[in-house]
Amino acid sequence: MVLDTNVIIDYLIGKEDVVREINSYRKDELSTTFVNVYELLKNASRKIMEDVIQNLRVYQSNELSEREAANAYHELRSIGKMMSVSDLMIFGICVANDEVLITQDKAFAYLRSTNVKIMK
Image (tube, rainbow, N blue to C red; front, side, top):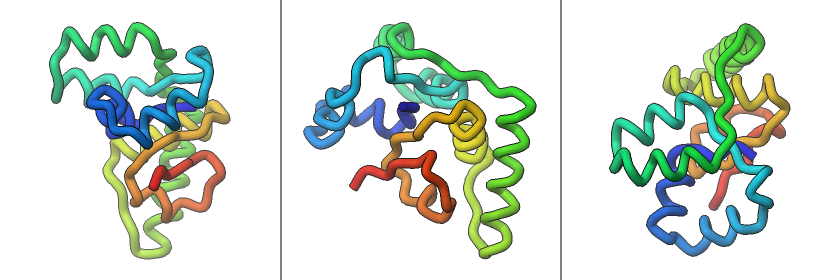
């Protein structure tokens, strides 16, 4: 399970539904991406985020994830929708690693994929 930036932040502030969701997984099942690490480190307390990141597997980009991100871009473009490059990269990394992204970002709903779980 790859945790999106919004999920990690809401977990840290103790949002009940997010805490319950994350706690339903084993710690060794939780991961994030290098994109999320960047977003966390630029927008929040570095010390707190460094501690959080230490406990997560961090996926990197590779050629397959970049191709998957490009495929998602073309899929969205064909239906007149768009996402940020960072979100497309996160999605591509999840698909390339056969992981599920846990997010609260409803923009991911436009992607027809079993690699995304949108929290309500």
